[in-house]
Image 1: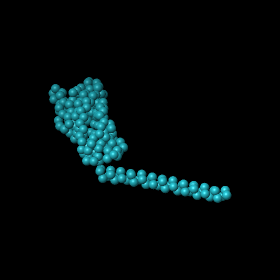
Image 2: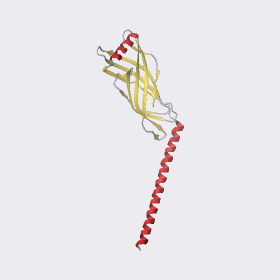
Image 3: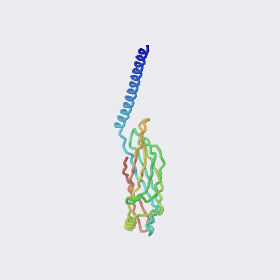
Image 4: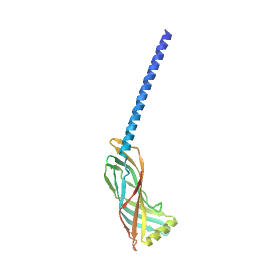
Length: 204
């Protein structure tokens, strides 16, 4: 009697194990199919990087002290366009700051996060502030020489994170770096004039 019970126990244990294996295989196949569908959609749509433009820039202050401390106030108008027909973009974080020859000369200003639909435009007008930022001696010399020569090149940079939206699917976070050259002429009264709208390089 006990031997017969053991035989039935082994049979049901084997049966249960087989059912679990079948369920696990089905679940794994379902995950693989979903991932393949997402990959195919992604490859077909191929999201293009957003395009950024520096529309305008005005320098309210750009004072370099004898101790090589730079204080500056810069107002910007930056626009971005989503060139994709079927893909939206969530900008979760965008920090903008000014850079002179590789050195950050203002604090980072956060742009408001938001969603950019298909072929939509966004426009931001942030202020950048730098209060007594110490410059390397060679940079202080270069800035003085460029001001005296009547021109100066400052880069406006944006560092942030975005997500892509395809239908109801939303991707993970991607890092975005934007670099916009801002060319100014400087007159004898140290007044800065922005020269032209510039297209920015974008890395995602």
